[in-house]
Amino acid sequence: MNLYNSFRIGYHGARLDYYQQALQSGDLGVLPWVFCVLTERRNKVKAKAAGLLYRELQKMDFDGLIRTDIQMRQTTSSQWYIDWSNLSVEDLFTKSMDSDIRRTIVIFASFSPSGFIREQAIYMMKQYDGTLPFAILRLNDWVEQVRTVAGETAD
Image 1: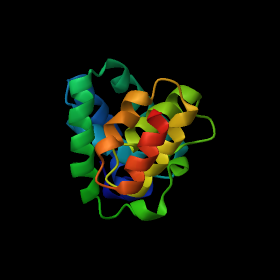
Image 2: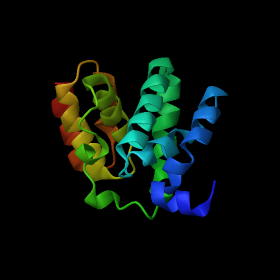
Image 3: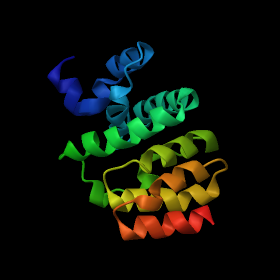
């Protein structure tokens, strides 16, 4: 990968093919980096990353979800160049994404290191079927606002 493309596309977007290969070989450790691609501006790259997240979510069992939740909060919080405080979950979408893909992004956003993003994601889960288990995960969140929204969603 040349350095120019890394900055033009975005660091994680430029590595998306590598992440895809890692996922195909069973390495779920790259999921936080695939999620980071959604913060980049190129819709084609974001769509591919969202598709990878969707496929992995379909295969994941409960233990895998818990591991991914923990890993995403530990890993993506170290991405200092992503200004999570100025992003919203809506920023992670493209106009062409369907409801299933948006649901997947909302679920992965609920694992975000940013309490603001987690709170938005839990609130948005009300719009999507089958998200209650993910809201329940946030009932013990350390951020009071996230716990409150998770409790309202779980009711």
